[in-house]
Image (spheres, rainbow, N blue to C red):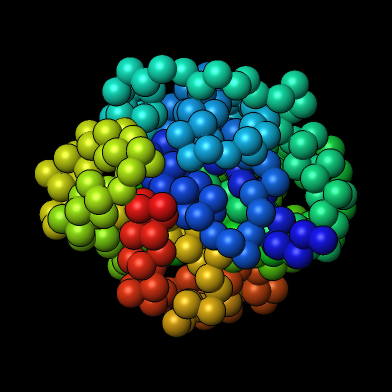
Length: 310
Ligand code: BDR
Ligand code: CA
């Protein structure tokens, strides 16, 4: 009997998504039961191809389900300037031999939530479009999910894509609103936690170079992003999705978590996509977000090292 924890990952790979997926594949206590693919960092055609390629390089036959090619309501800019035009550093890799499944990502989320009811850990590493669609089709989804973890938001308004908003939240705020309102409680690993848990560029490069094919492939697809990041942000690389995934896989390495009501701004203007945390609990809304504040850096680094040198 398989007593591993079933993990369903909604993702828009993306260089940092790729590292998060390698962490998940490397973990012996979890079983990745599917990858549902969002548009975000780059267009859906690329994010699907990247997910399939990463599975191939990692030697994993995890089913890949394509989701929505666009946000629910309003078009949004991508992050190709960070991840490359194809989302994987434009290294011109040979496409994977395997194709995506025929089933839509939103339907796969619902089906797998029944297959693994009560045990499923659902992780969102990209814009929340697919999960919002699944919730619109079946609002009972949260009842079957044991834990929902999202990489999203900037909890004191220090955004990355705009001064106040984080990329995943900003790309599809309406979807984020639907999802945040639907889950009575969820875990949030935000951009500000990412910045507080940087990865030293030199160390990461060393780990990649001492790995086999996985390390080499990851070094190549992440090179442009790491150079872009080193230019602007200094000695540490900020790998948002990897931190979220580390928390998923090793929850007891979290040192500080705050629980508060969290909402998102939908209005068009400078605050669109900003996550608003009611730190003083002034509005009387229920605490819905468990916000990661501090995570054990040594355990985070050790996990990344292991995943890059399998
Ligand atoms: C998030 O946005 C994307 O560019 C990354 O993949 C990550 O999920 C960070 O804000
Ligand atoms: Ca992502």
